[in-house]
Length: 97
Image 1 (cartoon, one colour):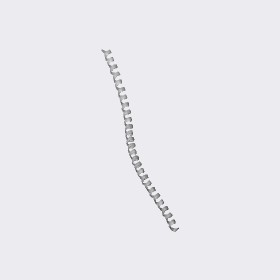
Image 2 (tube, one colour):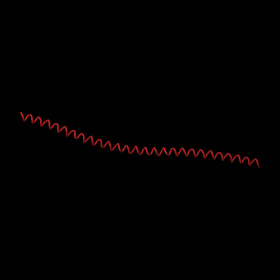
Image 3 (cartoon, rainbow, N blue to C red):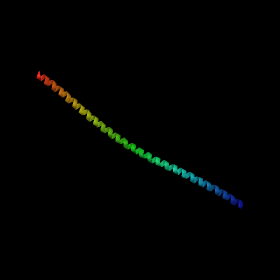
């Protein structure tokens, strides 16, 4: 009977050790998962920032295109005015003669 008690104590001790080892492993894995969760949150924030910046860039590109179109129109107007001025000067010179 006493040998059986010793065997049971050894078995109980073995399984307690296994449970403790399992708890340590589980704790370590939980800590790793928490670290990954933080990285995942950061990744989500970065994706959101990238989306916002992409939208802002698209808006800025559109505004730049509009400005360049307006600038082209203004340059055309200036060229027309220069040509009109040149024609006016030529006409003035021909009128003087």
